[in-house]
Structures are given as C-alpha cells and as structure tokens.
Image (tube, rainbow, N blue to C red; front, side):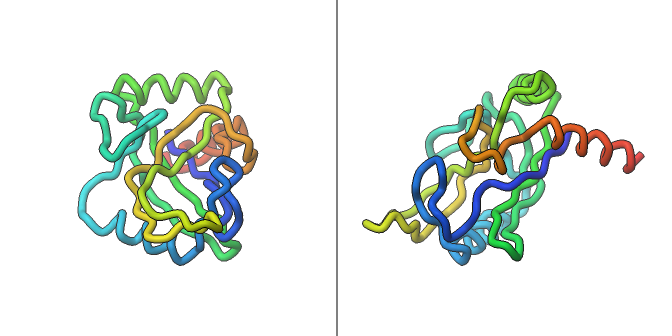
Length: 150
C-alpha cells in the first residue's frame, strides 16, 4: 500500500518541534539521502541514528519539496514484515498517522536547522498538523490509484 503526503512546510516552524527547516537544507538533505543506490526504509516510531531491522515498516519511495515549499514523502508499507503488517492494519483501522523525518543537524538560537541530514522518514501516531496525517482520504486515493495501475 502506497501513501503520499505532506510532512511540513519549509521555512516555517514545525508544529511538532518548533524548528525551522529552510527549503535549501531540506532539498540538500533529500538529494544526499537518495544518492547511495539501494532501498531506503523507515520504522514505526523510529529513534536513534540507525535503522532497527526488526522495526522496519515501510520503504521510502520518493521525497521532494514542491513549488509551495511543502516537503512531501511517498512510502510503501511492507506488509510481509511484522511492523509493516501492523502499520497497514493501523491505517485501515483509521488511526491518525504521520510521516516523521528523523535526522541530524544543528539548531541555531533562532530554531533554524543547519547541516540537516536525513536518517529515515518514519511513521508516528497522530499529529497536530492535519496536513501531514495519513487519512481515510489518503487510503481511498491509494486504493483508487492501485486499481488504476492494474
């Protein structure tokens, strides 16, 4: 099951962390993240500087910043793995989930992030930012798109 959604708007305070991620920092981090050949994975409620193989729930398909400065990500649940199956079931049950970037970098006194590097794009429960939630409408659009591909 694929999902595509907004993460947050670049250049504005993140509603979760209050940090400001300038567009150029996010674009550079995305470019660097996708440079090495190979699949990129995320976890449910990931933490730390490494991907825990027993917690992988999805594959990161794509990520970019659009013309309105929204950071987007597209993920695909990995239903064949235990955490991927749980993620799919939570989404089908209607639980509010969000794509949550995990990375490293420096935060200035003005809360501006510099030297940002992506570790993973994880999935976490709920969000105070409705635009970054994986919603029933996202699931419906995903199902419709899956049907169109067949």
